[in-house]
Image (cartoon, rainbow, N blue to C red; front, side):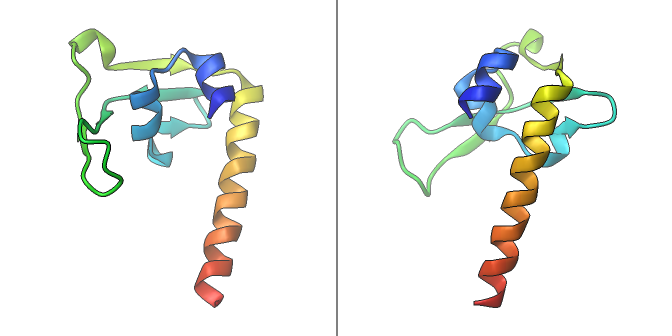
Length: 87
């Protein structure tokens, strides 16, 4: 998370709202279209909202180094998901 925040300038709420579909590995971009809103600090009650301003909806160019780290994380995430399904 910190790596992605440092390289992209994303806000924490934008990062928390990202889905894999927001990352374009071919075009080397991340689409920011939503933010995580959780005023009660509850792990179960949160909302994904559009950013506060239209200018906050954007595509961020991302270095290949960052995309490689994200892809490595996605592979690890998939492996963990598969392990959980077999337990």
